[in-house]
Image (cartoon, rainbow, N blue to C red):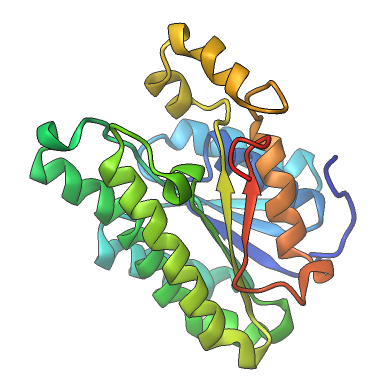
Length: 253
């Protein structure tokens, strides 16, 4: 159940990949707690504007910001510009891609692209946000979206698993670096969630078998993840840092 209060009133949250799927749900959940949300997108301005409308209906305010997290310079400039214009208390590193294939068939350029977006994007956006979020002190939050695949591995997803596993190490290191200023850094590892990415990479023939393997017998919804991110962003999570919160229906325990 989503938290609805004004605990994040006066805070600005930047959500990368915020225009669709899990990012959209996170943006709406943070708005429900009173946050101003900067919705990052790469190419779908129409989707970003639609999310902005939903954010405002949820009680928050929204702006959209176009930059590619996979371009280090563009990402750092985009985060800095958003922070200068709107302030920055909460960074949610959500943007990601998947290019699947068995290791023997993975193209080096695809490997590099997945690492550049999924892991390099978290590095670039976090680095650019640090001086602003440290000023927020106890309100400062960085929340990184990893994956159950980053913990458990998955055949045919070597690049994706490597990038998502890297996020966990990055999260724990940042948590240690920033804890002295009261800023928390945590990771969330979703299992299989109903998104465009899941639909693209999960053939219907495999869906029933997957559901059978999940103890809770369902694929998750974006709001299942968004509610956890919203919790981590709030004051009730002020003593939680360097942790990995699993949202996977029991798929990995």
